Amino acid sequence: MTLKEINERLIQLRSEISMPDSDLVAIEKEIDKLTEEKRELNAKLEKRQKLIDKALTINANEEEKTERKESKNMEMNYRSVFFKNLQGHELNIEERALLGTSAVIPTETLNRVVERLEEHSVLLPFITRLSIPGNVTLPVENVKNEASWVAMGGASTDSADSFAAVALTAHKLIKTVEIGADVAAMAIDAFESFIVDALAKKLARAIENAILNGTGSLQPTGLLLTGQVTQIETWTATGMTYADLLKVPARLPSPYHRGARWVFNRATFFQTVLAIVDTTGRPVVLREVEGGSGFLLLGYPVVINDFVPANQAIFGNFEYYALNFAKAFEISKDSSVAFRVGSQVYRALALVDARPTMAEAFVRFNRA
Picture (cartoon, rainbow, N blue to C red):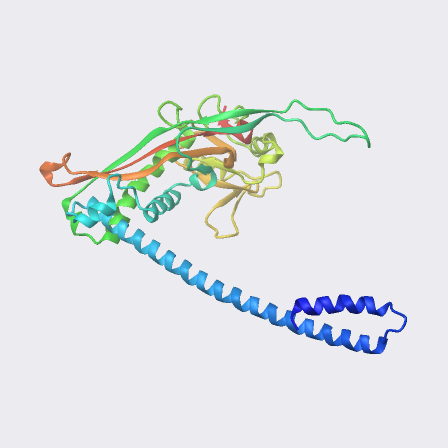
């Protein structure tokens, strides 16, 4: 019997049970038999469906693996042609077609550029990074009102919360490096590493400097630009004290303490901060337990940055500083500039803007 026939017979038996002259013993036996047949049929159907799903999954996985392999091979081929062109090698028709007219930087190389930027920058890993083409407007809370308790059955009162806007435009960031003609003899992987490292080091320093000291004119807006951070504490001209340090985290609102860190230049930290002790004579600076490569000041991580001016520091949560790559990095070459010496000039270019998104997330700390 089919599953449909079994269900129909069970419905009939349900009607027969209510009849006065029905043979209940026979009906019970038939119901048990039909129930067992139904269970076996359902088990077969379930097993059949599992086998079908398994076969489809295996096939889908194989297709996905094939697509990933083909995509990776295409990316590797494009990357090879891209750097072959940068080295000045002659391309054949197929290679020129693959490269196209735009010669977009390969994805793997772009990822390596970003990785190198993070390695060469001490602040970039902590800020908010975006990659949104064109100009960007970020909404941030302006006036904030707390939630209120309302009696059962009572109505809430609208609060005048509002949002401000932080606009990020696009400023041109360029770094060029001149390399001798012998780069044409380098292997693709070695050439890529050489170019990426040479350009990323200088680009990282430019971004790092802009995060702190950017003027906002033809470059990002830095945290130390006058007016960007309005919460300011000072230490006495005769020397920084434990009491001076305590004023800084006390000034930062509580929501921003998770993830907050200090930023000093090397001279200020090692000559002024490192020797300070608390009221019990214990050092206020401790080595970080994990890794042992950094310092904690009053329990907060310390970042040493050479672009912080002397006798200044900043404390805060750098997630509230946003940087947007309005246009991803591109790498191009020009052999005409250094034609006489047989060199080639390589250029990295990106459109970038950055600024603080929440002034109250930072406290400036200056010498009086």
